[in-house]
Amino acid sequence: MPDILVRGLKPQTVERLKARAKRDGRSLQGEAKHVLEQAAGADSEEIAAILDRWKKRFAGRRSADSSAELIREDRDRMGMR
Image (cartoon, rainbow, N blue to C red; front, side, top):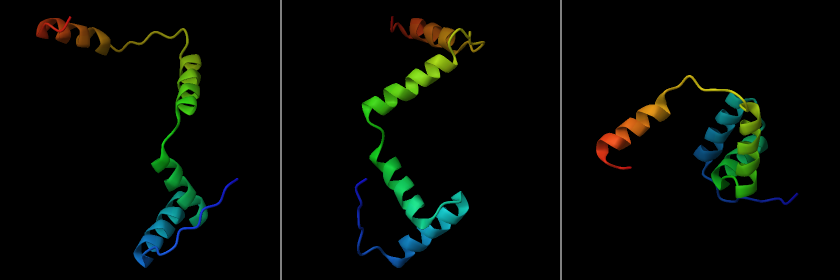
């Protein structure tokens, strides 16, 4: 796994990362890794895998939510369809 070295961080930045790490139950390195991975975002394969897991999880379920119906009504009212 590749490594990265970040030099010249402000002491306040390191202290904030340490506080976040403690709050989240991670080491400083683990917190820095988490922050960088979140900032880099997910690639399309990761997103597709996440969506596939959610589809499988909710397969066969019907939603009691009427939001889709409300959106259709709103679009009709606005002449968007």
